Image 1 (cartoon, helix red, strand yellow):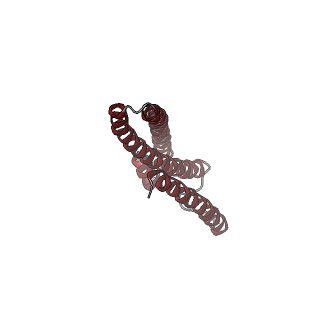
Image 2: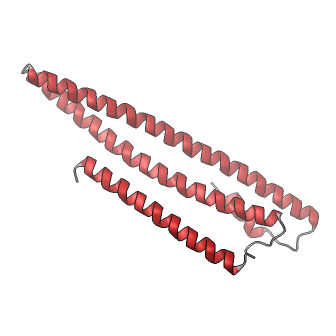
Length: 169
């Protein structure tokens, strides 16, 4: 999704004449726009998955309720059918939970990459050559990135543990 912008950043040079430099920065801006549209697509997919997951959970709850009601009146045929449907809905819920977790992870990675590339473009537009950051700001960024990464990993571990509990593992 971000390859055009990455290529533009790699190819950017301070030795370019002003016209080439303007054309290059314009292509980088265009690539950022396309990347933003890609992020919106990932967000839309995540929203669709979340809606499907909510629907499947509601269906599962309905099937379990009906199964309980059938068991109360000793309707074994309905209980067996409801049990079969409950298994199907539970499998779909587990699959959609996994899909949602992957999409959330994909979105967070894409957002991070987009922000990094956007910051790099801002540096270039301000006249700073690519990769010419000071060591002090790089050290601060590394510390901040490590904290953010640790938070994200802890969140992912918690979600995975919750998913495993729901799946009975």
